[in-house]
View 1 (tube, rainbow, N blue to C red):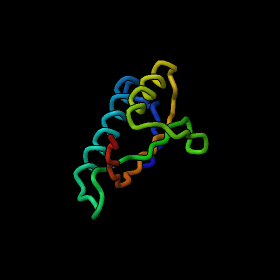
View 2 (cartoon, rainbow, N blue to C red):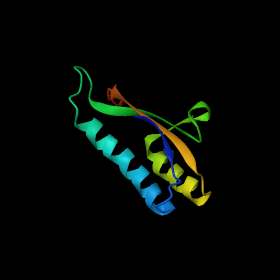
View 3 (cartoon, rainbow, N blue to C red):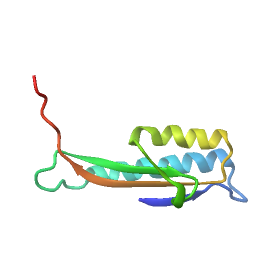
Length: 96
């Protein structure tokens, strides 16, 4: 998912646009996690980027995306970019 969310709309209020963006990201994550894993993979990992525009997006952890959207809301940002790419992950064994 690579998407630029425009938060300004003539009929829809700003808080509703923020919630719609959060919902879309969460829905994409759920859908991606349901896909079949390739052989040798244990789980779906996600490579994420967040920024005002695609050109200035920075790598972030998946858990930080919701916080960054809330931060964008507090700053009254009109547009932001989110990139979430599913990547098969392999768990590492703990060494005692």
